[in-house]
Figure 1 (cartoon, rainbow, N blue to C red):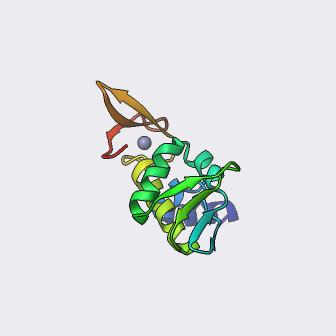
Figure 2 (figure 1 turned 60 degrees about the vertical axis):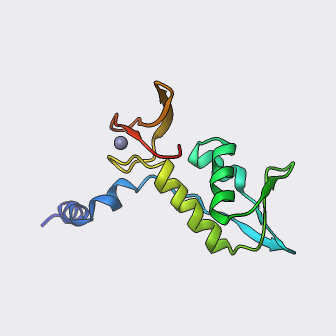
Length: 135
Ligand SMILES: [Zn+2]
């Protein structure tokens, strides 16, 4: 059997989800605890990857951590309270799953559109328009 053919077979054997996510890099939060606060250093970089508004991600994170927060002049998110980088990352991941990945095809090429005053998630990859709670 030719080598290429074998690779093809291996690739085919991969679960669907693995193939679909190959190009999307889940943003990794870089954070540290300072006194009683948690500083998310790359908040603005995360925003770029998820391409959602600062306000929306900010609201999600403060709600999920049940705390107040602010964004400083260098674009870092400061959460009141101590959270590990792992915790912050888990929240970012669940944000991406809820509000960025297309529920139909799991691709991240989505944007928020408004239909009759209701915000919906439109997928540029498969064309699906999905209603997502809290968008
Ligand atoms: Zn899609």
